[in-house]
Image (cartoon, rainbow, N blue to C red; front, side, top):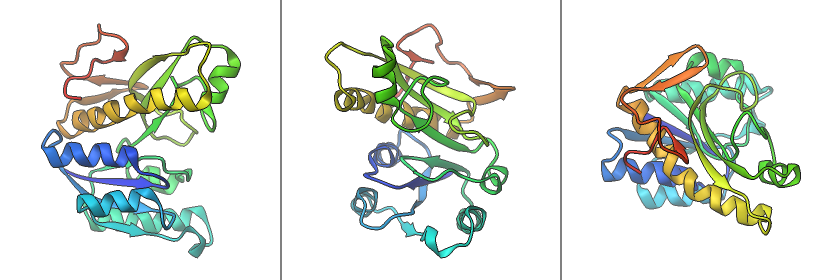
Length: 215
């Protein structure tokens, strides 16, 4: 199965997925990394891992839809089966979503549906919640509103800042994103309405539901 990753920044989640593929934990291949910015960490990581990368300049297109049509054309040409957004800072259009319906994953550093969008760590601390976490979900036409695949919980201490909380959450991001990708590649994900069911998974273990098996 062919996987594409779209990134806009340092590429740490891209790296976690790519390393899981390279080690054989995920039975697939990274067909391409697509970036919308130059000189970012994701490109450097791709080159170190031997992953082909492509820069597509968003300013070269008159609309978000036209830009996404270009991305989709690349993905179709490479016969990509799954698209992973990993720190990708662009909202994908309906053109993109319809082309890869239920085949686009995103990771968000909060327990959705709480604190969608930007600055989720600041929002969580300001609101005073006692736990936050990370969510891997399918992408739909809303902002962080797609069907949830897996979530992990992180406690918030009174001493936490946005920076310290971000680091705690990031450690779990690097575990649950490759796991979600593996479940998809292995054909274990079933979608029923808004619910995502992972076949033969253990749903009784917290803080990660369903429990991680390989990461």
